[in-house]
Amino acid sequence: MKKIVRAALFAAALSAGGLAIAKNPMVGGAAMYPTKTIVENAVNSKDHTTLVAAVKAAGLVDTLSGPGPFTVFAPTNAAFAKLPAGTVDTLLKPENKQQLTAVLTYHVVPGRITASQIAAKVKAEGSASFTTVQGGTLTFKKGAKGYTVTDAKGGTANITIADVAQSNGMIHVIDRVLLP
Image (cartoon, rainbow, N blue to C red; front, side, top):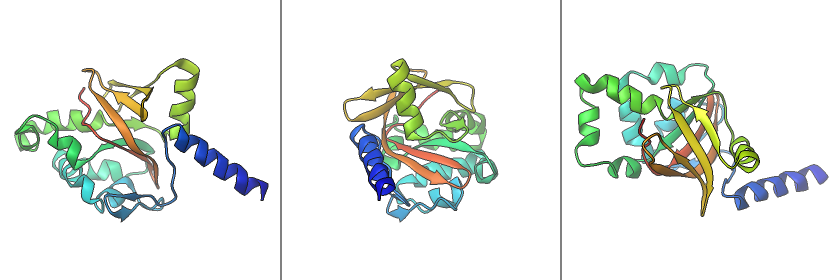
């Protein structure tokens, strides 16, 4: 009984700190299963159709289906819609594959990084920085409504759904596209 109470208190504490945890959380109207890969889960989210199309166009399906582990900061369709008009269509063109790959791999950090790891590092150091697969840096801070991630250009996204466990990593849903 004590373990159940402690687990509930831990989850409530993280949620109060702005990072919610749920078993098989719903993302884009679909349950996300920790037994499936990043790609297997993402294709079921109606909120991530643009991201999935971009991953396919960049040729990253096999990589993100591989063993990893990877932590993906996954922008929603609404996040992509905030980009200037025509940006997504331009990035999806075959001749822009290198640029698209750079943008997508900027959203991926090697390893399995949990919300509690981000929160602990922010609490201890004031902010947390992680190097992306692309080679850039993402910086995390505590914001008014949870945790934020800032890109190299100073753009800031909010983590809206944290700790979506995958068989090959972790997904954290964000509300803006990050740019290297």
